[in-house]
Image (cartoon, helix red, strand yellow):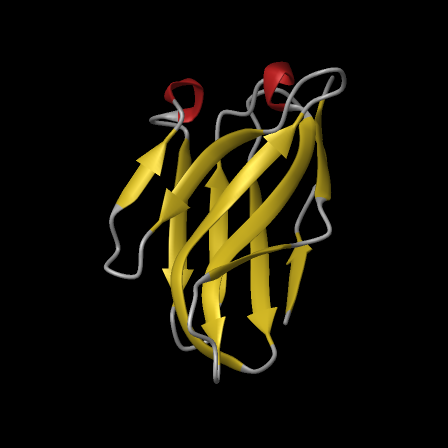
Length: 120
């Protein structure tokens, strides 16, 4: 199983970016998918996640600015980030909780990370 994240980059404060993360491999079912971020010198934090049923949850600091969505057919999760602030600067990692064919247990997989820099 591989999770391929893309969409990071440099953006000015107030700007927008859209991150994508596609899961591929011998996937039977995906439970939830989410995005984490880690800023320099800080611990990794959960930014947002979305369940297989479409329920979402966000960290307080991004509520109203970020939107997580999911394409089940493509095994892809998106993070639309609007009104970006310098404090959003971090490496963003996607995460998926899934089963491959033959699995009994759900397993967590991580993408490689994509850098988001918000600066003027």
